[in-house]
Image (cartoon, rainbow, N blue to C red; front, side, top):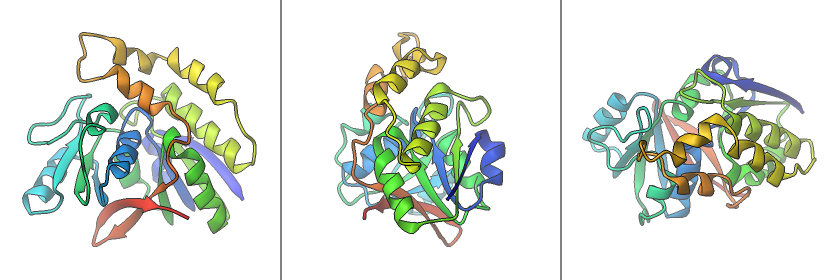
Length: 229
């Protein structure tokens, strides 16, 4: 199995084989918690206007997402693990739009399969990929807005690579590095209430869930569902 590490939208566009698109803070931690709280599926859009237009046509029970960290007008929820963890989503469908993770999924048109990556589903994602035995895995850290690298996504990419190569990294050491990273500080800034300190706590729990999140391409839409072995 060949493993390629990449970053940001430009590398997502070149991703081939089985791709893991990473967004730790916060999209694909939020998505995992939504699934854990009963969501059936999540349709992903890069642009909030497209997500809102689809929702107005009757697709999705709820909209969740962010622009510059804030819930877009017309959306039901922001892109917050803490916020979505307070909601019962049993049998609900969601439409999600963010400026990093969902952009990366939409950009990865060359990939044959796509998984959503974050620490909370790391081991389950690796188990699902190893079972399928692909020749090539592209791991893409989407970073801040898909244009600037971020510590949490880069470290998650390395963490996933180590797991794929059957090495068990020291997550406490990884977590310590991320906690000191620049992208983490905004969650503890009272002037930016759209970011919750609890988002960091929830995002930095490795292997919390026993399911992966896999994308299905359906009628031009990118639909994520729980993927279990």
